[in-house]
Image (tube, rainbow, N blue to C red; front, side, top):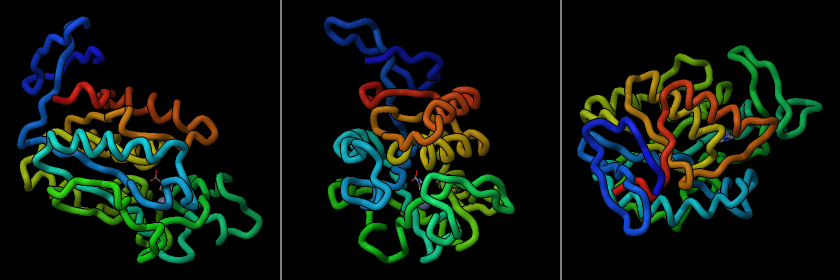
Length: 232
Ligand code: VGL
Ligand code: ZN
């Protein structure tokens, strides 16, 4: 178990035999687990498969047992979505383009509405999950974040939902660490939530230094980086 500091009222100390004192985090009724984009397109055989992405599924299933509140997200693009390299003449996946709202990384076609690739993994076993937020469904705007679209202003409604449910703490897991997980965690901080990313319950794409940058940005924003073994 890793050593976690500054956890406030949710922390309790446990002594793990043969290890140092470690702080365990106990999710309460004011906590939510956000399971980000665990969809076939991002898993082995998918059009935007994240390396070792399937390894997060059993870890997420395990930690989910500690949460009364679980929300999942689903990347949910129109055919011909602006984030697809295939709609930009002369562009290939993982290249970038400048759009009205800023720089956009271009991707292989993925998570098209209603397709099998857009389905949540059949191996997720989280029956209590209460809400699925779909995002990226406006053809001309991407949305990595579960909270706010890439234009920086269009909301998905998730922050208002969580506040109405009196949630204060957000735990983020899923795919991909450096895109949808990181953007979600950063927006959770902006919306005033205490925010944790469960590192071993995520896997990254890591294109052009994106993974290191994502962790640096999250660290600077006060996102807490924890491991699944830190959760009681
Ligand atoms: C994602 C790239 C494009 C993600 C979604 O889930 O991290 N990445 N669309
Ligand atoms: Zn996408």
